[in-house]
Image 1 (cartoon, rainbow, N blue to C red):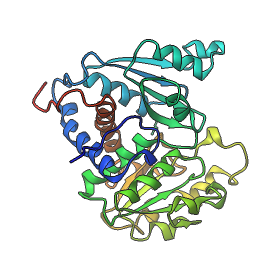
Image 2 (cartoon, rainbow, N blue to C red):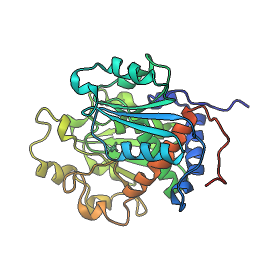
Image 3 (tube, helix red, strand yellow):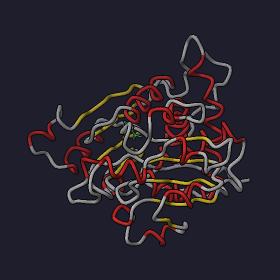
Length: 315
Ligand code: CP
């Protein structure tokens, strides 16, 4: 039997179901490493990972760094403002310079859609997309799938309502591809102004109000209002947005009684989600953060061509 393998991870479109399932199974095997007293396995000893982040990040950058270090790789972080990017160096020159130092993987976050693919075409190292513009955030979708599996035991047949600023969300685009690939039914909901014109091409039913999308949902995934990308007037005020599109206890009651609430972070508390829901018994937001380390360990391990068997006994 052919084992599905990973080269670059640029988009969920790089994955078929067996490969996506293999990443999730590998992440499950790595999950307990983070709960050990000594959080390290020797799997990627002698390998080099560069995290190249041109955009701000707390969760993704920290979890990629921890993932690499827990696998015993040498991890180097390069930030846009602290590198020669601030002197005007191009993306192409920066990544070719880094590639000349023979890293095994470069993890890239960039504000331009397509940046990860652009980089992958120019260098030898494996590229992992940590979020490119409005395009894709594939490891976020994988960690979301992993978190749902942890709580529900399956994805097949579940209804997932993804709500909020769909237009600017690479998380929504990635989940709209991955979750149906794994058997879930995805609904997208948000104000007309924050839905992409081609929303139907994502292959999911689209709602202009939250309530019908929440009805009977197993999973409610709220999205951040991306204030930094809102150039125009997409809605009257944040207060009005919260009144009509915010998730509060009353709206959450439309979902199944055992529904879980997710959010990729960072949260705009009191805007797309109320405090009591974000911190309430349905919320699995911090579980998503924990899942992120295990999933990124799996992706890095597989991107480095799986040099050693899974070291499950090692510490
Ligand atoms: N979910 C996510 O990408 O968060 P960060 O921007 O903090 O990495």
